[in-house]
Length: 238
Ligand code: SF4
Image (cartoon, rainbow, N blue to C red; front, side):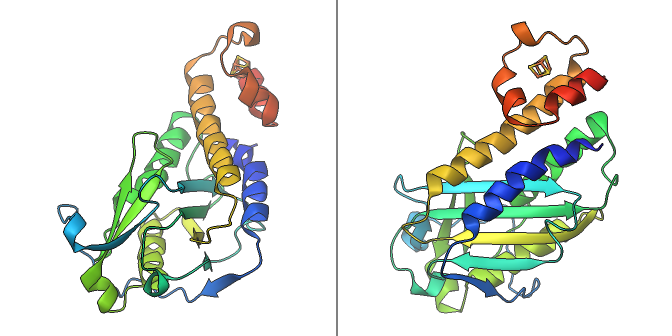
């Protein structure tokens, strides 16, 4: 059993949370929208608004699977208003469910490194007018949206197309489901809890790889090991 299957239960819960009325499928438009460099900044005076700004919910999450039934093909979904219809800071969530070829990432430390590398894709895509910022708590992901880019037609299809293309630069990636949410009534807290669980699963996999000694009574990871089926089995198997 690949350790990647440990995320599948949480992916199902995330998909159920995101399955809300009003969700729209956007065209997966590719990477036609211009890119800037990692040095480019959108200063406060040049931005139209910030997604997740001013203490509003701002959830960012990337989860991997090898299960084709969970992520059959590329898709881009939006719940709430698209960028041209927004005029002020708004709550925000971004979820990427990424299917990789079975066993393409390896096992053990190689798998852990590959999971982190794919997560860090968010630091390696720079659509013009769409500056992603990640806070120290890692899951808080905000986006400054540039006024000029908005006037030239920036929307989630164009920014999202760039992100999906960035994931596909990794040869192991087979399909990406990318979800954006700006709907004020969405349950961002519930999504943030799932994002936290994904992070805890990744950290526990790392702990298991580095610690051959198994002593559940003395371990600080009992809670996540009780919640996620397969983590204890993974440690026992080592
Ligand atoms: S199986 Fe036990 S020792 Fe291993 S990570 Fe989980 S709680 Fe800790």
